[in-house]
Length: 118
View 1 (tube, one colour):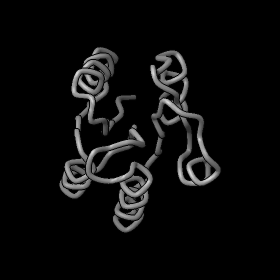
View 2 (cartoon, rainbow, N blue to C red):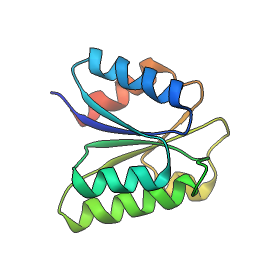
View 3 (cartoon, helix red, strand yellow):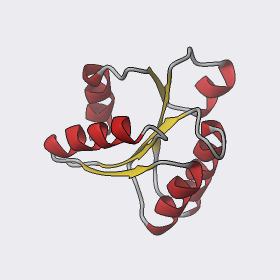
View 4 (tube, rainbow, N blue to C red):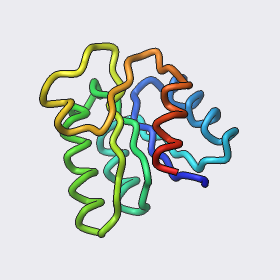
C-alpha cells in the first residue's frame, strides 16, 4: 500500500533524499522545510505519516506535531507522527509522537514503521 508522507526538516538535502527514497518505494512524499510550510501543506492535503524534525527554524517540532495532529483529527483522518531528532526523546516528545527516530535515520527502522501503517 502506498502512503502519503509529509517530511518536515529544515535540512533540504536530508529531506529531499528521504523523499526520493520513499518515492522509490512507491510512496507519495512531500517536503516542508519549515513548520509553517508543513502546516500549509497539511491544510491543503491529508497525509498518512508525518516525519517531523524537532529543531526547525521557525517553530519547535512538537508545536508542528500538535497542530498536525489536531488538523488531522478535525478532518477525521488518522496521522502517524514520527519525531526525527539527533537527541534522545524527552517524555513530552514520547507522549506526543507515535515513534522517535534518531538522526541519521535508520531506513530499516523507518520501513518497519511504515509497514505497520500500510
